[in-house]
Length: 285
Ligand code: C2E
Ligand code: MG
Ligand code: MG
Ligand code: MG
Image 1: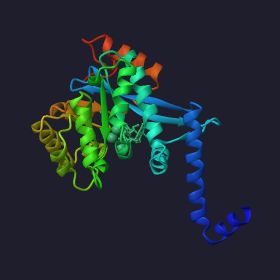
Image 2: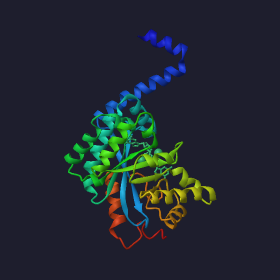
Image 3: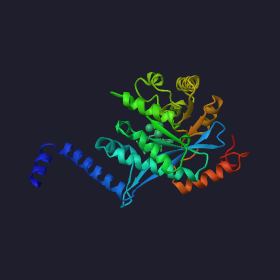
C-alpha cells in the first residue's frame, strides 16, 4: 500500500496531493458531523427601512478540534462531490428549524445544494423536520443557486414546486452570477430574488452597475418577487437601495453572520426600539 502511494506521488505529485487532501477533508467532515464540530452562523436581513430584521440566513461553520476554521467555500464542494451534502444538509435544516423558535416572527433561510433535491425523499424530510420542530412552513426559506437548473432538472423543479405549495419560501440565490440567469426566472416562480453581491460591490458611483442593479430590482418586482441585495458594506449602498425600494438588505454593514446567542442579543437591540434606528445612535440615515 505504501509502495503504491509512493509510486503514484512519484508520477503525479500534484494530483496525489489534491486527491489526498480531498479524501482527508471528506473523512474529517464526516467525523465533524458526527462529533458535533459543525455549527451554524446566522446573518440578519433588514427590511427596506433598515430598522427591522425580518429574516436570517443560516450559514454552515466548521471549526476543527485544533481551532482551524474551514470555510464553506472549501467544504461544501467536497460534501457535494462525496454525497455527504445530504446528511450535512439535513443537519443544517434540523438545527436551523430548531433554533428558529428563539426568534419569533423571523424567517430562517437555509442554503440547499442541487444534489439534495436529487434525493427522492427530500421534500418529505423537510416536512418531517418542520413537523418535528413544530415550525410553520412559512418560517422557512430554501435558497438555491442557478446551478440547480443544470442537467436533467424535472425532478428538481417538481420538488421546488411541492415545497412552495406547502408554504415553504423559495429563493434564487446569487442572481446574476451565472450565464443565463434571466431564463431561470421563467422556469420557476421564486418567492425571493437575491441579487449577487458583485452587483452591489460594483455599484459605488459606477453608472452601468447601478443601472443593472436598478433594472434587476424592477424586473424582480414586476414578477412579484421579494428582492434581497446581498453584500452590503457601506451606508451609501443602503441609501441607494432604499432610494430604489429594494425590499431587503443583507451584508457586513448590517451584520456579519452571528452565532446564535449573539444573534438573539442583536435582534433584541435592533428590533426592540422600533421607533429608533436599528443601528443605534451612532449611525443616522
Ligand atoms: P451564500 O449563500 O451566497 O451566502 C452569502 C455569503 O456571503 C456568506 O459566506 C456570507 O458570510 C458572505 N457575506 C455576507 N455579507 C457579506 C458582505 O457584506 N461582504 C462579503 N464580502 N461577504 C459577505 P459564507 O458563509 O462563507 O458562505 C459561502 C457560501 O457557502 C454560501 O454563499 C453558500 O453558497 C455556501 N453555504 C454556506 N452554508 C451552506 C449550507 O449550509 N449548505 C449549502 N448547501 N451551502 C452553504
Ligand atoms: Mg445563500
Ligand atoms: Mg448568496
Ligand atoms: Mg454565494
